[in-house]
Length: 129
Image (tube, rainbow, N blue to C red):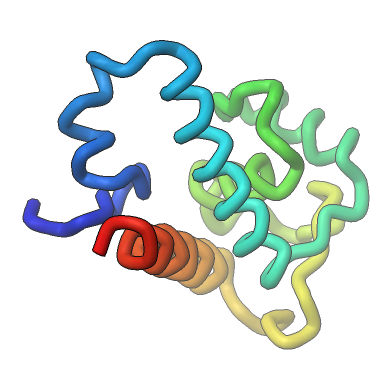
């Protein structure tokens, strides 16, 4: 609603508007950019210590995450969908970076989402002034 970057999906406004007219390669490139950003941000807060355990928990909880998504994107989706039940983190193959070790799942999720949006917004401002 007037933002240059969608607060939900983090795509640029013109990408949201024209999404259905994009070919598969264009969509793949946008998705790759967003996954790179989310992975980068998630690494600031989380450590994926066991990718297999993380994948198994995501499957057990029936959380929909595309198989090609990296482990840090999967970890964020787990926090988003699993909520406060994602405790203790070690049961999910995760650890929290020391600086955030006393944060709640909600605080982690909100901070990752905010930083993801800020990174996407900064990218938009740099390349689409």
